[in-house]
Structures are given as structure tokens and as C-alpha cells.
Length: 387
Image 1 (tube, helix red, strand yellow):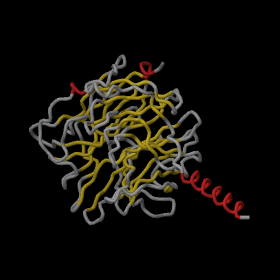
Image 2 (tube, rainbow, N blue to C red):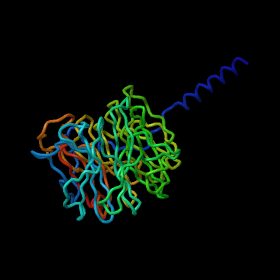
Image 3 (tube, one colour):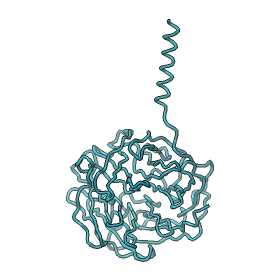
Image 4 (cartoon, rainbow, N blue to C red):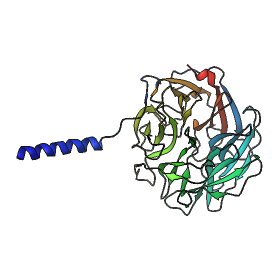
């Protein structure tokens, strides 16, 4: 009897150990894909036909800080949104501006205000969504009174790219406003479900979200996901983006606030309703935002700074045929091409910051800020990224 009880206890302990084991990372990166000793290019080469375009450049007059660049296509035009301020990041004068291109991103109009700043707080860029009938701009609002630091998500809509509706709160499926900061990168599954993420109050705790409303303005549901408390009013997992693997399952990648300099990743097998724990991958990361998605042929991509330190340079794109093994990479900007910072300001530093992407008309566009004082776009012909 004692042997039986001991055996049962051992079986229970083994079962418990297995149940508490961390899941495997949803993807991996081929060994030696990046040469970390080569701080200029990581040993990567540029793809054929690559072009870099400047949308905005800080000058002696006007705003000298920019970040959070996001692109959208609507009615044959490209739209570029970012947060802008006179000098410092997240300053009281921070507002959201946008620019429009009518020639596929070659030239851009003067920045226009999309959302003014607010008293006792500020606003930042939240990204775009379109159902083809209207263009939705998400605006993140950060009132000073919210403690610990956090915010909410608003939206404005246009049908002609000129007239914008009054700002309204993005709504959850339960009829309440989305009390969190929208993460700029909504994509849709093949069945139309939109998946994104938000940093929810109190503080900034990340969770995937999803909606079956095609406008992207309501019906959002907070997915089942266990974030890790970073003990600083935020979760360890931050600022995610996502792609689909060859099984049709969404994979979300996160910045790691604990500075492992590796991407964290989680996967969902039920259309984004529940997610595994986010675990470390072997994808290097400068502890920054990234952009993930799929090319028209299904190839998964990650655009970001795949380095093992805080320097957000160089900028690269990493590719996977199945979203499980990333085994190819190209250079988008090399470190030596980064100019010096011209204007001082809070959180201003060298590097290619916070990339976000758009696939349009045979190109992959990657938008980012250079030194947080230039809004730039690098575009690559899709044929140059195919095997």
C-alpha cells in the first residue's frame, strides 16, 4: 500500500511538472543568420530594387520629435500617421499628424493634424484600419490623471481622406470603452476576424484582442492571455505584432521589458481567443517595437532591429516560408547610413525606431523614424523577397 501511495505521489509530481512546463517557442531563427560582431550590416545584404523615401525631416522651425509611424492604403492613396512634438518624447504638446501620398509613396504632402493634443495629457498614434469603405485612424489618449500611467483608445473615420469624424471611443463587445492603449498593428485572419493587442489599465498590461466587426471600431474582446508583471506598472510583454504560420495559426511576438534582447512569442490555435504563455525565442531584438505580417504568398516576415543590445540599428527584415523557421534576412538600413542626431530632446537617440509595415501594389513598405527626427519609409519589391 505504501509503495502504491508513493508511486501515485511520484506520478502526480511528474504530471504537475509537465503541466507547469513552459510551451516551446512557436518559431526559431536559423543559427548564425545574424553576425552580431558586424555592427554595420549584421552580415546581411540589401535586396534588389530597395528604395528609401523621407516623408518628414525636422528643421529649424516646427516640430523636431517624431515616432510611431504607421502606414495605410485607402482609395489608391497611401496614408502615413505619427506622433509629433516640438522637442521631447511624450511631451504635453504631443499630437497626431498624418501625410498623404498619391504616387505610391514616392512623394508626400505636408503633415496635417489628425488629433490635437489635450490639456493635462497628450495623444499618440494608434494606427489604421480599413474595410475598403472607410479609413479608421486610431488615436491613443494619455490623460495625466490616470495612475499608474495608462490610457484609452479613440478613433476617427473618413470616407474621402479629407473630412474626419469627431473622435469617439473604441468599444468592447461588452458595450464599454476600450480602456487601454491600442497597439498600431491590426491584421485580419482569412475569415475576416481582426486581431490586434492593447495595453490595458491599470498601468500597461498587454493582451491580444479580437473583433468580428469589419469596421474595427467596436466588438473588441480581450483574449485569454496571461501576461507577466514587470513590477513597474507594465507587463514584461510589450508592443506586439503578429503573423500567421503555415497552419493558419496567429503567432504574436513581443518586446521583452526585462531586457533579454530576445523576442518573446505566443501562439493561438483558436482564432485568437486564447493564447499560450509568451516564451523567449532565439530572435535577437534591441528591446523595441517590431512589425510582423505575411506577404501575399504566405511568407511570414519580421521587420525590426535583430541585435543583442539597445542600439536600434541596423534595420532588417527576416523571412520564413512556414512561420516556424526564419532562415532568410535582408538589410533595410545599415548602421553607417544613420546620420547624427541634429536636435536634442528627451528620448532622442540614434537608430531606426519602431518600424511598421504595409504590403501594397507589389511592394513591402516599412515605415520608421530615423533618430526620432525623420519619418522615413523603405520599400522593397516583393519579387526581391521571393526565393
